[in-house]
Amino acid sequence: MIKILVDSASDLAAEKSTYDYFMPIKVNIGGKEYRDGVDLDADTFYNLLVKSEEFPHTSQPSPQDFVEIFEKVKENGDELIYISLSSALSGTYQGAVLAKTMVDYDGIYIVDSKTASHGISVIVKYAARLISEGLEAKEIAEKCQNLVSRVKIFAGVDTLEYLYRGGRLSRTAATVGKIADIKPIVTIAEDGSVAAIGKCLGKGRAMQFILDKVSKFELDSDFEIYSLYTCGEENCAALEGKLEQNGYGVSKRLQVGSTIGAHVGPGVYGVIIVTK
Image (cartoon, rainbow, N blue to C red; front, side, top):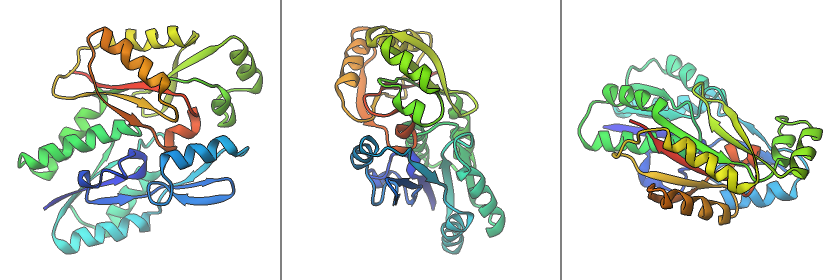
């Protein structure tokens, strides 16, 4: 049988029917270490993030963590597709590649999602659909890798504080931005890194910027449009209204977990699309 492995950066921990194996990434916040998606859910994480003065740190799974799963797959005679957190954001992908060489089993396929959070979950659900259609594991992995470049995320950042804490902004830039009500727009770039693609004065202009970005693409009707939020849904609801007024029906609102949430903080609003 073909099995699916996800790591916790996919924010799929609660959707257990979507995958067969789950790999938690460890998060250290407030002096305590948690297993993301196991003993740390998104709401708890944001509560700790707001209270803590220290920036959270993550630690990737070890190759041995992957070996244990890969050996089990090998013993069962199954095949496995692992859709990993972007290799540009973590060494998790590289750890899995090393583990595959240690296990020496051809039935393991590792897909670098080049994205994070529910960008990964879009690819995971696509893989599950292809499994149900009876495709072979190798072909599914190839199709998933081909899908990677078509998954787009655009999000508005409500506060600059966490970009500053994570070292992406100087204190001066963060202070000036706060006074001027500057709202950055971020995306997952083609290389899989988080990149700023715009700075807007106020939330209204930021949401229009996101809409303009979406409108530049021809969307694939085989995939749904999802909205995104970190903590607090008011901004996300406003963005959904703007999208829907312009003919983009959002099928579901999804919460972003710790992997991306630590860098952007509460109040984030965004959208995931899949282009043709």
